[in-house]
Length: 206
Length: 206
Image 1: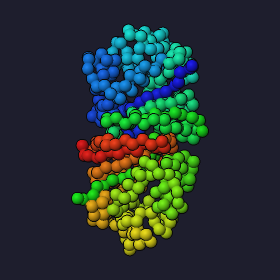
Image 2: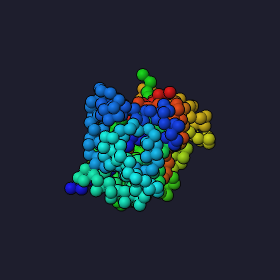
Image 3: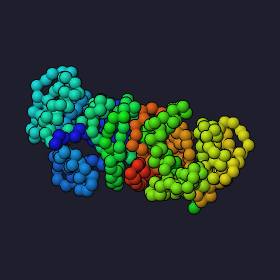
Image 4: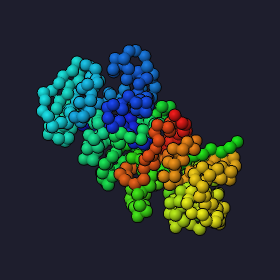
């Protein structure tokens, strides 16, 4: 059985998933967007921040999202930012396909993450990710513009949003520029946790 | 005990609560925003659309929101639109205070709704609504600009959003222009229903 194509992001109640510039990333409100993630056991393990951490539904969701992912796709800007910020053992542990205009040899990191650079467009990158993922799913990792390109092209099967109780007022809006006339949603699941609301939708074409 | 000040709206997943123009109001996507409301028994009763309708958590939430409301506040544009669209027996059945620049005598409708026109600003309108509501709550009914003015002024205690599984792409954004540096939220409750996700937050100042 072929895997599904999904994305999974934390979004503020006013629709933002990232600050407009990297300089804002450590601002107080931006920490609140991801605050539900930092104390989780899986997050700490995966970034080798030490033992311990919370276990519960939030942690299970992080672990399940990781486990279902056989390959990831990301945009060039997310890769450029991450290349500076990820630890040497990048936290994907699968093949990652970077949509770019610049050819580059694959970049293998310790721990099983290999970045492949695809300069033939978003469909080609997804085809390669599907082949690499086998029967597991393909995650469109980000950033916002890349997620939206896949969503508008009808290439996303479902997505999850961790809706954080914070208003940010500015930044990258997840759905800015969505083709609202084509993209229809169905609410699959709402899972409350004390810190955040986990929402899952499937996508179909109108 | 004094009542609380709240608002309660249906919002699309991309943050819109109303179309940009009345002409769009009957469009397919806009119907989806409120689709969870139309089949409910309370909605049908209150607008005298006939007997029957669904009963369940969605219906209870509509009924509870109505029952807690001792008075409403609305902006002039919402009143102007509603004046043309509400039935003669307007659906509030309480005093409604309209924030306006134009003085006008109170307008009493059959069924207990009386519109009072307040030209001394949003705080004066709220003071009058609080006095009228007694120990019940004051609802900031809308539209978006009026809700935001009260939210940014620190005058809202809590709010509820029925998050609809639809992307609209354009219209009036609930939180456009929010003072994100001042308005902090706490997630009080998430209630899933098959059609929509009911979210409740309290508001505090940073």
